[in-house]
Image 1 (spheres, rainbow, N blue to C red):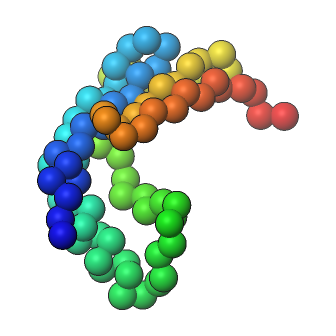
Image 2: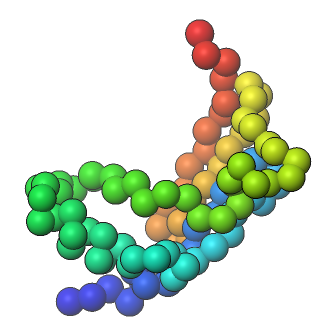
Length: 93
């Protein structure tokens, strides 16, 4: 059975209070279901596995001016109605 929410999830990313990304997964070239189906032909997927699919528009090298994270920055990201997290950027030790 297909989940109706899986087709229309909204992703967002905020750095220091400024929205960098706010998009729907509908812009993906291949659906999450298609990517998962393809990968499962070659590997066994388990609960909690993460499939990296790239990043939506908003944080690429074409951004003017370029914006890189630095110690002290606060990054908040999430998927509407599913999950959210906050990360504080620290210097590499």
